[in-house]
Length: 174
Image (cartoon, rainbow, N blue to C red; front, side):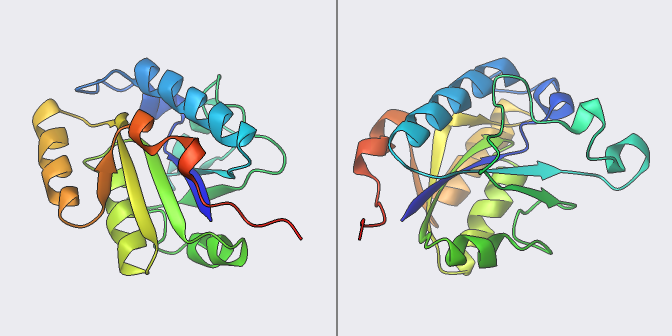
């Protein structure tokens, strides 16, 4: 089964200077992906980064909230990470497996950091991995280009339209 995993779409991160796409563009694209996934019965998971110092450590601080427009539903998991990768030191792998997820579809900020590290971790843990390149951005256009090149040898890198929720693996109904 597939799961859409949206990474680091918090207020402070989406407002950073990003390239090749601005944070608002990624938020809009991820909101569409989340809505389409929900409509198709694909679970949506959120991952957020807390830096563990001062206001960065408070999950309720406005800066750490998932950005408006991507409201998390009560049944959607939010995994908190304290480093770059979403699997390192978190229950994400165990919880995904318990939910029957074998294929993670990743989007968010930044491909050259959290999204890219998470993609490599997921592949090393045996998940099938798809990165939706047009639903990611980085701190620089060059860093983004380099991250795409590195990931193409390890995971599937495609566009949101090419993935399309019509192609997902669903849990069969009893």
